[in-house]
Length: 308
Image 1 (spheres, helix red, strand yellow):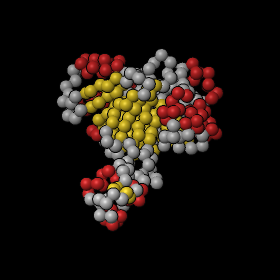
Image 2: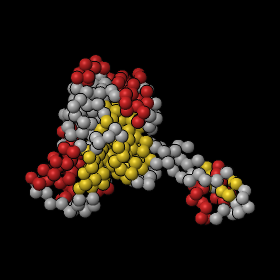
Image 3: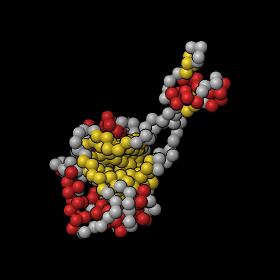
Image 4: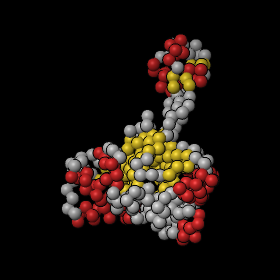
């Protein structure tokens, strides 16, 4: 029951030899999601052994180049590999125009279908949902450029049946699904056996929020409240606070303040400016405000464990 984030790229607009532009892969209960697709993303996938063929959903936060320049290369590779399964891409409406144009110009012959889903239609939007997981988008603050954050969360699990007590009370199989859903059991004689006597609480759900390319934006706090893991951009240090404000980015300190107010369990900071050769000061600045902070480093994995 894995819930794991792999950092494929942690830098901002300009790649370096050690830090690629933004891209992440999530494995949530063996559902693989790609978030953003900066230049070199597929190279990083191969380097860090990401199963490319299992990615069926790609979420693009906005159409700045450092978040999309790897996408046409990935789609072309899928065509060359003979991919046949459908691919869903979620992003701004301009993204569909761009990718469609590129595929046409390159005369890409593919055997798979691409389905584009437009976001920015409303404040919070459910993009993907099945019986175990859902993904929502929400607006960030990146100047005139529409930019979305993403919330990935497990759905609440059914309650766990206590097998010995089920047998003891001779509870028929047809009634057990309703017990998982929290209903009490009523015997043929009309006696009520409370649900909590026959079941135990399920394992807690896990959640991840992705917030890149944004000025500090307190409207997101109710949305990301109490998530297990928050990724928040920290392009600059507080010494560059004026530059961060002018470019609608955040400092490490500001990212930590958002994490603190949202009462998240763990913070990852990333999207670092190329001007910084080392990131020790980013980590120190954030940890002064929010101790449980880690750096987004290319190839690093963050696993949310299941705890009772």
